[in-house]
Image (cartoon, rainbow, N blue to C red; front, side, top):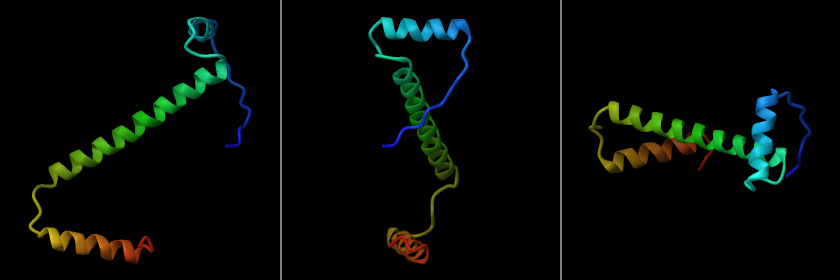
Length: 84
């Protein structure tokens, strides 16, 4: 994976926090710590998106369609969107 260089500005307190995380042995450098924070944020965002979809589905109620009708509708939608 290609990498890009970014410059960020931190407060002294934030810089000291990152340094303490590295000193504690959790990370080897500042970049590794920041990448870990980004990965965690991406995971949290994905989980929140899934949770919202589940809530929306639950709130929509019980479908009157049969399982076969639901499967046929999904297949049709995927064909229409060139996903199948």
